Length: 472
Image 1 (spheres, rainbow, N blue to C red):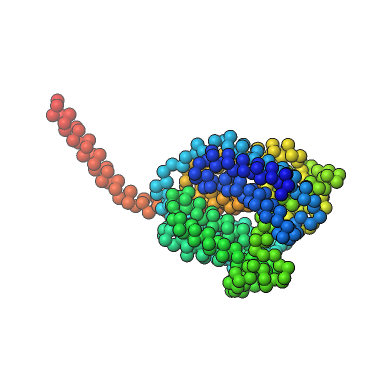
Image 2: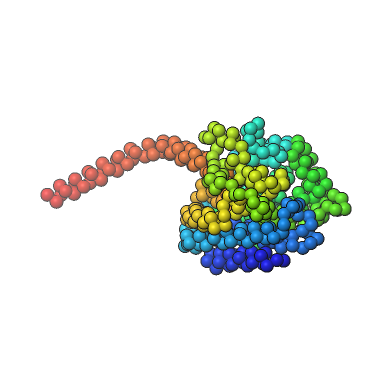
């Protein structure tokens, strides 16, 4: 381990200590805290594991990149997350106290009807199993079907909302069966991150609504999540990712996943296939992308224009509003833009939240940007946690999912929040419809009571006039 990497780990430890000290015991129930934990996994645990020679030799992301540049990038990214955390704490998030949530679970269960949400999950799952859904191996853009775009946008958040709505109505005694179904549906997509994301989001959503999940069930949930993780990893070893990019069908994917647990160690993929620990280490580490950019800059390649930073946020603008959005090409994709300009490998890099902008901004300006992000995230979280309503419960699910997308960067997080916002609008419309229906049902009863009320008023007036006469 180099001195630079050791300094990065120290900065990350200070970041976590500050956060834990200010937020208290319930700190891990906040989306921003989860974001910081993801940064530590990405810039701390992953690089430490890759520092072991037997594991680091499989880090294909680092091919052609000197280790000193990777460690320097790690230190810059860790400092940016420290600036983010300090700015976040300046919003005093610990002062946000959610009021008593009595009756919230019942109200949310009525508004978030799990049956309607399940009706949305079924076609998205079918499309994904047919290779035309959440993970079809193609990028969204020209020629991408509407069904694929819908699945990519709503698949993850709809599944966890349906699961949470069912448990809010029927109780946590169904927690484990629901989690098994949720993890199975997500595993069909062949991606490991959504399985973890929705498991965490489900537990925290229930807690936000005032429903505590017993610790034994949480431990069992962790075991189920690990099993799903191993099943997907093993299926990739045996069948490769192409299984999940093609029309392999729901049954075919489940069969591959059921046999994938036995192959999770990689023994069936060839003598040089990395084991599960090595795969996790390579998958966790997100500093190679920034390291390659720093190396290219050190060799004389100038940084790209900072104007691309705010422009990348426009990725969250829907295409039907911005008609020429798809014509922008890689201008709205800062990762691919930097891969092209700085001559990096044309592979699926993990840029991570600070690393996504390291090719546009110098380290001091990167700290300023993440300070602004920290303030914005802190103010939003304070507003979100101030009250628990069905709409805010949906936004909370989106916020947790977005926080666990740390590796992809802020634009992708905004896209995830956009999906949650669309569902919030749907919830609002549903609430308005229920209110109108309730008024329509009560109107006849109210009308039938009017004569009685009129008679009571007349009798009261007559009694008062009689008393007045007696006094005279």
